[in-house]
Image (cartoon, one colour):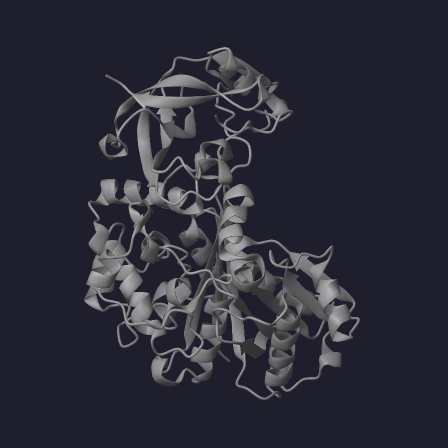
Length: 385
Length: 132
């Protein structure tokens, strides 16, 4: 396969973005990422987007191309849940490898806070998100309740406590304090965590992500071409995917998933070992997701992610830094676009541009995304070329 | 009153039976495997979906207490319990634990099915209460 790389990136501060339309946000991110790569808008010959909940179109990517005044041969809008960033980059790889495109623009953004309203966005998720519309929805399960069910099962199985959940929340918040684009930048301690109200026992408000306007864009091209562009390329080393089911009612386990299978597939494709990973960007729409995903991705034994977080193992100066940008829990959760921030941080860290949150000399990053309630997983390995 | 599930779906026979006070669930006629959530019956072994009337007992696998409802019809119902239940019939089902203090619900507790009406007069739903 033709080696590919991420040559351009763009991200804006996550949070409330009043006075901007979702399409203008996509356009701005796209132009920033193309300029970051040192390319021109006219160079783009494929656009891949997600359909923002705040601004749906028949073919969103084609609407964006039209808005930008370009007519690339390929304009695709895909659905991949939280695993979408890995899906989109892998699609770009195949397009470039197959000769279909040279310069693939990926834009993933949404404005659930300013355009849709937080409340109606959350209702949309409960109506048509990971909740089965026929056999689950009549009983009023919220998304936090579905993750709450997994949390209680996890506590019951492993003897975990709210201290383990808090460890995830506090870890991400501490990291976000150093990120100018992070949505949640107020210092948080255990007392603050415990003071946050129960949303869906045993999950508190601070076990859930905020709802953010935001997102990001990346430009993918061949590694050969990327070497002549502005930044040190972030080479795509491998991608891997796995799924068990979509709905929680069909899950064979409430406390483990196939994230590790996706990771193993990506490592095999890259010809790497788990020990080669220098930074993990792990999908954490809830604290319980960080705990279970850390374990299933091989960063901690089952039931011990909370203890590992408290030990400092995953701090930026620790042996395997996790979510140095603050994760979804504190960097932000831009609706349909959630997870693209993990990909951006991987590239920023590989470039050595992370400033106060820079991890020392990373060579390989693992970016993990998850769709549904531990349902689908996508893993992308990036490295210095 | 519960909002009716969408009619004309794979699970409609289940909801119609619930309205009559029967827990009727789908299985593969050849393998006996549960078809829940609704799924296709692989035809290479001649299997079809077979609806069976099932015993009404089950065990709580896990649960959450919803404090912040999001759907309009649930706004004044909090706190309420959403649980996964392993039915004695071999099917895992998401439903509510009703008529109890949510704080008394526990993993492993035995539950019995009862039926509630919905806004569609032809369709009911199974909910559960703690045994004893």
